Structures are given as structure tokens and as C-alpha cells.
Image (cartoon, rainbow, N blue to C red; front, side, top):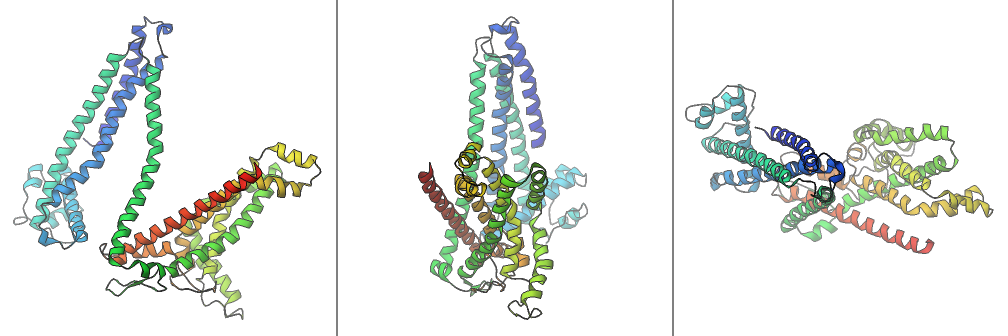
Length: 488
């Protein structure tokens, strides 16, 4: 049985437990709800959760642990002379998994029996052609080692699935039976259910933290591996970016960091004033009719895919800037449509709804009594906005600008299509440049050897971006706290 079917069985057992738990509680109270410690629904939910939660936890843990354990067991079957490093071993294991999946598909479509799939040999059968007949394409011939490992992979996977299914169903039945045994009119079902709900809430809150920790650790480990192969001083202070998988690479981050900073600065210079002015107008001056029409229209910009913005930069904004600042316009500043200014302007347009929508919500949350007090003291509407409303909303506005800055730093498609791929240090906004995120994509695409510094540098670039963004957030929090101390 598949994991989805097991999940449905557990849910069905929980539903049965819900009905049985309510009925048992009412029976123990003699049918009088006043004799129960908790409401009948709490008894029902207690039994349902007792059947559902332990079984689902076991199922999730098993689904995470089983592939790793099987992979480790099967890897030990691969002779060490077949691979030189972890990268080649990963490629061999991907072939093993592909053959194992192909054998499973062949059994499912009756092209092979289970016995044939387990006993087939490369000496007597062309496994590649047999699997190709059912639509499984393999890049190379299947040798004896790969086939044996794939068959072992299938056997371990089938055994693990059978044990998983039995244990998950037993856990659900045990939880259901134990909770029904405890159910009586004196049982504190509400307290039990609230503890489970509290644990689920804590787990949900912890999941985001653990995800962040996992991301950071993966970046750190691969960054450390990179700096074992490439000098840190050359990476952080090098002014040339010239990767070469054949060797002799120069991987200086300064040109990439400068391109990221330059494009983000232009984008924020476009988005922050326009977005903030739009927010002030919509919240303080616009009529309800205009606001109801203009705000959703502004927020449509946030739903446009970034690839569309990239095409807009490549096909519209770039040629328009060339016609003004290029040779045709007589200035000769711009040689092509891909430039820092092109990507910055389009990215700024993309960021306008982030700044305007968040700033509008923050400005609207300022108490009306503050506006009334300012107007009552004789201030004009513009003075009230400038000296009362905006200072009170400043922490939220700073958060909106930070969100826009983070989005600008992490943007990729607009940069790839609008700014070009040249890594250079230049003050001319009409030159083509590139950013850190664009180079992370380029370094991790293609036939990259993940044991080489040219591939591992992507993780070092990501770690550098993470540290820079974290520093910006800490600095912004310090500014907000200092500001609040002055005004509260």
C-alpha cells in the first residue's frame, strides 16, 4: 500500500474514533451532558487525535528516514573503484534509482513478473531495451552492478514499506483503543485536547525555525568546503569574476556585489518614493471610490510573474532607453538594451505594490485620534501627515522598504534578461552588469561537478547574501528602536 492510502486509512480510523469517543462519553454519563467534565466534542476529538497524531508522526518520520537508510545500504554495494568522489557516486545512485523505478513500472504494467524483476540478469537480458519498451529512457546501458543494486534497492524499499504500513496502522489502533479505554465522564478531555493543540502550534512555530536552521547549515557546510579549495581573501576582495571548470578560475565577488547593490539601489529609488506617495494618497486623500479602484489595480503588479517583467525589460524598456541614451539619441552612453538602468527601472516597478500596499496598511492603522488632535491644534492636513502620521507609521514603513530591498537583492529573472551577464566594476548605470543571484543560477546549471570550487562557489555567494541581508535587518531594527524611544 502506498503512503497516501495509509494516510486515508488513518484518517478513517480517526473519524471512527471521533464517533466512538463521543458515544462512550455520553454513555458513561448516563446520557446527561451535565455529568461530563468536558463537552462531548472534546471527548470525540481526544479519541480522534489519539489515533491520528501518533500515526501521522510515525508516518512522516518513516518517510524521511527510510530513503536515507536504504540509500546508505545500497551505496555500500557499489565498488569503490567505480567512482572517484561523491559526485560520481551520486550519479551512479541516480541510475540505480531510475532502474529500480523502471522495474517497478514494468511489474505494474505486467511487462515483468515480480520474480523476473528480482532475478533478471544483464548476461541474459538487455535491461535497457526492456525498460525502453515501457517508456523508461536510460542514458546508458545497465551493467551488472547497477542492476544488482537496483534490485536490492527495490527489495529494501518493499520491506520498509510493509513494516511502515503495519506499524502506522498499529499506532493508530493503539491510540484509538487507549483513548477509548480512558474515556469516561470524569476524564478531563478538554485539558488533553488543549495540550495536543498547544503541541501542534509549537510544532508549527518550530518548523519555520528548523527550516531556517537547515538552510543556514547547508550553506555553511558547503561554504566551508569551498573555502578549503579557494582562498577566502581572493573571493571577498577579488575584482575579477571568471569561472572556468577547466581550472584557473578567478572568483572575486566584488563585481557581483557591486552589480547587486547598484541595481537594487536604482530599484529602491524608483519604488520607495512612488510607493510611499501612492500609499499616502490612497490612505489620506483618495475618496472611497477611487481607493476601491486604484488599490486593487496597484496590487495587480505584485501578481505578475517576474519572467514577464524580464521580458518587458528586454523588449520594451531596454530599446526605449537605447533610443534616448544610445547612439540614436546622440548621447552614446548606452551600447545595448541590457544595462543596470534597464533592470533597475523594471525592478522598481515590480516593487511598487510591496511598498505601497504595506505602507498603506500601516498608515491606516495609525489611530484617528492622533490626526484629530493635530488638526484640532491648528495643523494643516499636510502638516498632520508629515509630522504626525508618517512618524507614527515609520516602523512599518521601514519594514516595507526592507521587504522591497530583500526582494530586489534576491531577484534573478529581471536581472538575467534586463541587466546582462557581464561582471564588472563600473559607475555607469548604462553598462551591462550582473548580480550575485544570477551567477548562483549560472554556476549550478549544466554539468557542474559539485566537488569543484566553480560549483561550490554558489553556496558561498548565497551565504554572503544571507549575511548581508541579516546585517541590514539588524541595522533597521536598531534604527526603529532608537526612533521609538524618542517618540513613545
